[in-house]
Length: 82
Image 1 (spheres, rainbow, N blue to C red):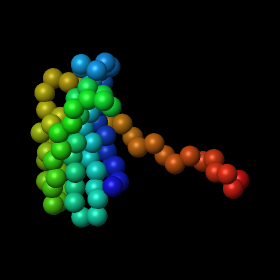
Image 2 (cartoon, rainbow, N blue to C red):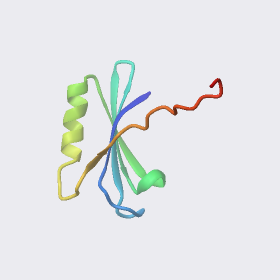
Image 3 (spheres, rainbow, N blue to C red):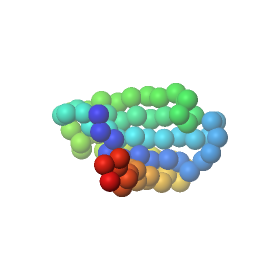
């Protein structure tokens, strides 16, 4: 499964933090809505198309939170072969 995008509501702490992830696995699109950080509770949505998944993401990002898109971490430039 490949993570395509990640949004965070900009709040710290287990009670306030919320995240939304957009992932793809072969031809299936997955959206995860997580409340409470890495040990929080997640809700999952599965879609046939990217458009359907993006529509779900837009709906989840509605509200008063100030959502920030977090860039995927680039691969490390260091490798043991260099």
